Image 1 (cartoon, rainbow, N blue to C red):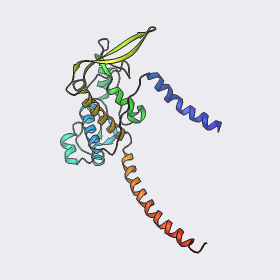
Image 2 (cartoon, helix red, strand yellow; image 1 turned 135 degrees about the vertical axis):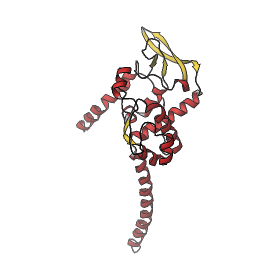
Image 3 (cartoon, helix red, strand yellow; image 1 turned 90 degrees about the vertical axis):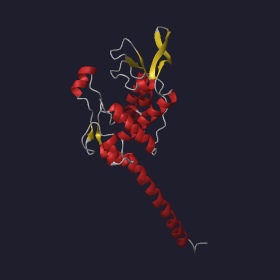
Image 4 (tube, helix red, strand yellow; image 1 turned 180 degrees about the horizontal axis):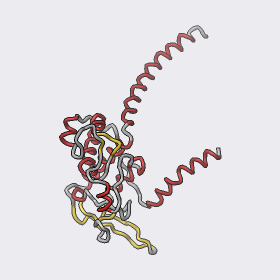
Length: 241
């Protein structure tokens, strides 16, 4: 028992340290892989705004279209900006060497980001950019301080300013003040980020959708089997008083 407990603590310790290092309360996000409309909207956001710099090199366009109910024709017309064929992998438009030269670091592949960071982390991160004149890009992030990535969706969210309070020599975050509204209301922007995160959760484990479908068939099979098992039980025990 002690060995099992020690192994569990060994596995969980890095996760706890990671969460403690962030020191930021992560906001809940409603993940629903059965919401195809949300996944389709998230795919559109990802392809238009994320795929310029970040790859999702474990996913093919046609697999994504098949899973999300998007025909090859619609994929070609609306989502195929960085590739020639729907069977191509979803790779970034920007070469990694150029990105590293411009941003100081190559943007990570986002295929498994939702599994590594967690959906709450990504959701909070995408809503926590704020203006910072000391930053090279002009932006900073509460969840990921001094991140090299600029706020690519600032036109949607607007420009917000982080308000900190000095407590015993430590700058403690208080709130965000919106200095310049975006094209979306806060509620609309939150909904768009939920769609994006929902898609990234699918992206990290697309087989989960298949498991959901198989799970339904398994439950139906077990329900039918239960009827026959009950009738068989009655037949065996009918002469027992």
